[in-house]
Length: 620
Image 1 (cartoon, one colour):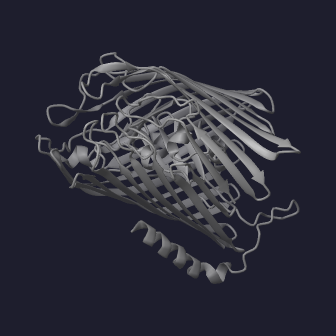
Image 2: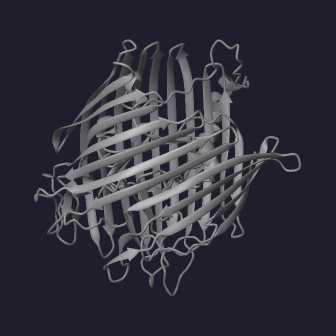
Image 3: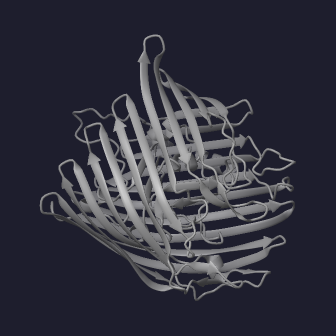
């Protein structure tokens, strides 16, 4: 079904834009050009020129994604300080991410600044295991409570997936001895005032069983991803932009170690965004109409469970740069969520309901007194059932030569999901419409040091707490009333050395994440660290090639035993991936080795991960 839809889209868009783009020409960036023939703009929500650069974030570009040899989002996110990920088996299986030690539903996921968290999941967590990376242009990670910028669920932080045109036509294909593959086709049409970019990718992976046991069988995942980006300049300072994204992931999974065959999940997600951007000197205005949809189906040996959720909304913001000292921004976001699901197995549950939320937000950036900056971000969310709630962020920072030192205080919230509000099950649960949102507060001190033209270092110390925790008690979700917070604290660092030929990144995270009783939260290691080394070589006999090595240490942590459900300590893992890119004119041949030293590990307990695998590929 999805393939037919994508084929129709590709044909129709080619026919639709054939006349306008038939005079395709190469985009020229000559030094004597008065202006670029194509202008790609991406802006952080609720920001303005004097505070946008002060917002802490990690940016992973398309170039880095290719150097990593990444296949899914997890391949990239595991290299970010403060991010811990567990996945219930090999690629395609369900995954959970804990940003700065918060819960797996405390990370907000966005596409081009629009939230996409699935409201049909029980607690609103995003499953990173079904997201593959072929059509993604850039990934931005915002650690810390970010509700004043992005909205509900950004208690631990936010991840923004950038879908934009890639104007370098290409075809990429990888395979291995097991006939697994991943490929991407990218095609662009560029005219004087408009551009169309079409991407289609697919992944097939079948390597190991998700669950350990006596009757292990390999679990397969098959993914299709399509992305269409169209931009048109209506006037010199006004452009329209459209993004269509469709992702379908079909994955086999295991019910238990003794009951493995006959289980399959079909996860379909799609988003459509249409926007207008007016860009003038000292002005940047945006208006975006958006729609997100999820259609998930799970087959448990003939028992079919269906989950549907939809979001529609309108978002607008403006930013103004008054002078070198002051900038400000204003905006609004109205979103309407509705959905339903039916679980028909031995555990029977259903949900049907809808909510809406209207938010207004603003920010001020003030450059004052000798390279100092003060930033204030404010937001009010008016939720249909939980009412009005305010979040904010205050940031002060100052440059001391090549050293920037800052301090921030930020708040967050997570509104309850459709299931928590409206769900029912056969064990007596009924939704609680009186739930209040979870709230958080975070304090952090950070420094960024430009030690030289090629070397920089960043260090962040943080402490956060979460109140009004939503818990499942006596067959009902309720807010915690014992006045004991969930507390997290930690220290994250990154050292970056970059020259024309070499790129080194060394990162580390030290974390303390506690339950209300003071014991450690599960699946959050106290320490994790890693390193990425990328080096270009040019030899007369071998030509140009590039080697990238990625090392990742996931420290000791506590987990739940998969059969007797006791709390156990899990050993650390040390994983190394290896990627070689050999260039031939306009082509690249790639050798990728994952889990180079063939480490045997489970994360979480009872769920197997891939050993060493070798893949060969090429990119035109």
